[in-house]
Length: 427
Image (cartoon, rainbow, N blue to C red; front, side, top):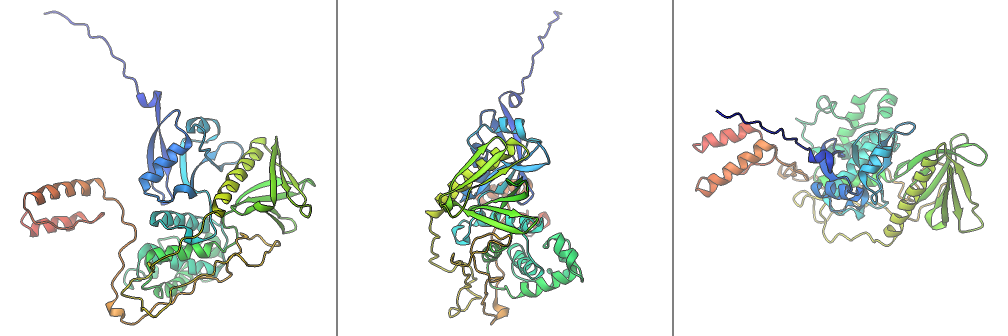
């Protein structure tokens, strides 16, 4: 019997040679993986993520990573450069995060449901992590909007204080400052939650967004530097301009984009030049040159978005899609929020400078008649089915085509319900 010498074959991992897989964490704390080539730009990864999520307005979002230089801090991905090269140079790991990069000053610009949902998740994260500051009353109102947006109509059996304590609705600072603790905050929010019956979950999200837009710190990305007198300052970059806050004196200056003629970066310095002689230019120094350059690039991207944003007009709603037609009387007005940009300017406090209404929350007017006839609202966002549910759907469709009776199966429906339905149908 002849003896054959088999030649050893080498297996090449194509992914490690020409492609790589990167994990992107979403705003709902889930993650997805993207397979990219080594030459893929940052925009390609962002487009892949937003398309898979079904975001109709992806222009508000960006991808960021944790920088490994200095203290860990988030940095935005440059969309026009190869992604892999950026991560290898500056990132702490090959993990990306989908976040809102460009904040807006009018919630009516957000017309896409999935975009509004993720924008709401971003603002909720900003509130819970104290990046945007609120007082106790504002926190309880926001929590009631959050409950409505995530749970639908109030149900006395499901929405009890004991059951809601497993969720996070309040910043840690608010809970610690409340003498009665989290239970008192939840009870206050539940009282307001009950009054939101008949308002859609999309409306609750928009009310949440609109209220947060009026709070301190909204839309600012902050950096620490020193001025020409070697005093520590905090620079806040936003859609409206550059804010300069002096922690020692609590004084604040704000430079609007329309008043800025140029921003200049040279090594560790960053300079703001103004168009008028009334406002003098300011120069700041950072600890590292890469930080000064990053702030300069961020100013350019924010100013570019500002110019595009100025040309946009908030679309008018032809119909009132924020109320259940069976719960809102026709003679009642739609809730309205004052978003006129004519409010007084205040340069002495850390504010968002959006000149929004100072009303703590939108006025809601909903009919409470015929409560027994109110129908529960369906969730605005239905999750995709898991693998087992999808396989069962395929099997049921085949049986349906063969003449078997058909029944609906929603995503995340318990398998026990499916099995009971099959038993009743003689399967």
